[in-house]
Image (cartoon, rainbow, N blue to C red):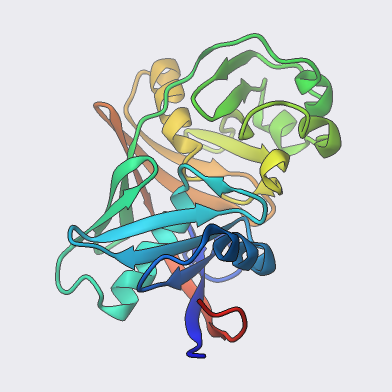
Length: 267
């Protein structure tokens, strides 16, 4: 059996041990879904990304330890970093991904990698049963988009102090819960945290796809279209955010932390 190379990449991070780690596995063809899910479970990171070369660029899929997801920002950033590191895109500054959320772009900028993702606006929603109790905080606003509930809280202090009941939060039917507040630090426009126990991730360190919703929400609140955002997890991460029509540009850095080989269960 020929071993498969894999990479561990800290995404939305300027150095190791910050941002959100993702596993990236380059493939030449797609194995069965059970193998993909089993490897993601074994990696036990919030996301494992797999990519296969295609005529237009690369086909891309993302798996948590429990499920395949439709959109993931940090693992796309990590994949772009690996493709650039391996020279698989030649000298082209733009990487084209085909995914379950349509075509996605990653632009290799001198200062960062910029993702071009679909905007995922929310609309006002009644909080579902158990949500407020599970968070342990009174919301200023609750909305919902295609994937997640969005909850604005009174302050960054309240947001950082949350100790959710993840068992109860897992009963809320959605991909995840985005909590957000205005930043108390002038360096940032807003802060957020992201909880997704139904997908096997109690708290995600930095969530690019959540900012596809946050970008539109804070555009309406702050009446601007460019932001510097901070995800206030234990690891923390900075995301440059810009709304461009029905798209959102997410800028961040990434660091390849480790590489290795998959020795068993080879396709």
